[in-house]
Image (cartoon, rainbow, N blue to C red):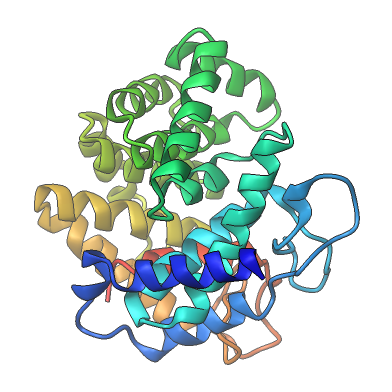
Length: 318
């Protein structure tokens, strides 16, 4: 009962925060339906060793197995949906995931960057301190931000276009933990891993994530990312030929950049991306991996994290 009490209390604090109080106008129903789609698919537990498999979400909607590497992203989406809609159940689901991250850290597990960002954003000072210590230790082990990006490049040798994506997620966690200088250093180092194919799905995802991190950290790399993304947007408002994940990341990055700088071109591109996401949401509240505008079932597969990524974009552009 203690963990549940903490989750509900934290959820109430989130909904009473200044960000929540200023969340007007009220979010559209499509954001609410997407939030319920995500919240209702959270697993209470999962088989296997390690805390990170608990209170998580699967990667593919048709498979119930928890995916530890993407569950933090879903929880962040629910946290943002809670602030946008005022629905406490969304915040409670995110806080249940945050409790899992606390258990993982105490047990010596290494959470993924979105989990650490989630912990930093619960509103609890102890959580933020734990997140900050994790990020500092990880960067220090690698010998600095450049060393960390080089480490990520070795891990992503088969998919080099995603190195900037991985670095951006850690930069987001650093920024949320109060480590602005480290976040900026990670963004700067990640620009050296600029996608070789910026118009591909992976390239757009990386640039969108990098732009979001750069906008939050106030990095000079933001303008370059924004121009590259806007230039590859399709006439229908999507990116990478109607790819949901690419469109969500690009839209969110451009929206954050527009908020930070007042860039009108970025704001217009973000609005067009959001309009495409609004048009392609499925009846159940989710998004398919791709959507050519045909009726179901003539759409892509349903991946839970991609719906979460669309939610994070639409929570900014309403």
